[in-house]
Length: 174
Image (cartoon, rainbow, N blue to C red; front, side, top):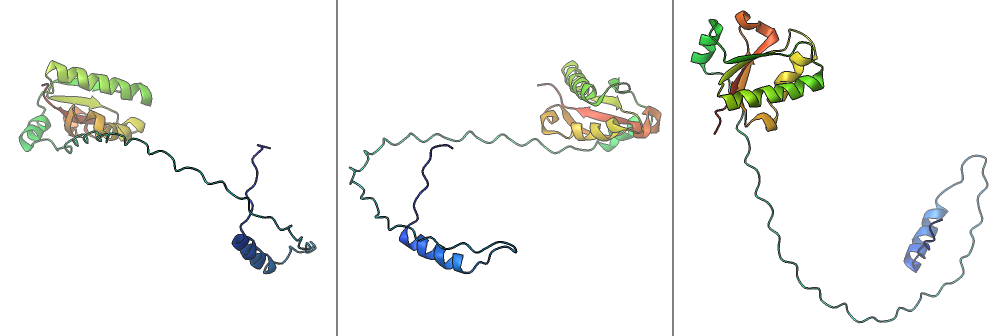
């Protein structure tokens, strides 16, 4: 055992416990236990202690200012979307075929950040028409840690891969 002593019940607690114990009945096949009279225990006399010395007040620590929320993702502008739909050029393309989910996530982060530093504005990310990456890439792009890089994204036109690809709009490097 841990060596801790159990706290004695106060007289009020003992009276309450006895009232509760009278209302219960034993489980089927068990005998009712006889109530053992607890020896009268005198409450230990506590010695009066000097009040503890007042602790010096801690200086108030200011909470760090809240981080500014990232702006919501915006859809591509109509003029840009129309240009891309007609087969307009994208600044870069990245094909995620053949990558496992964890590899694809890290490679995508690296690709987007490197293209942003190069000044790319719109990149094409090819995920494939079905599978895990097609479902996960939009979630990754919406994560708060990518908001400083990504303005928005939308499904690519059929000329660029349709449902298996995304146009990703990148913020300008500052």
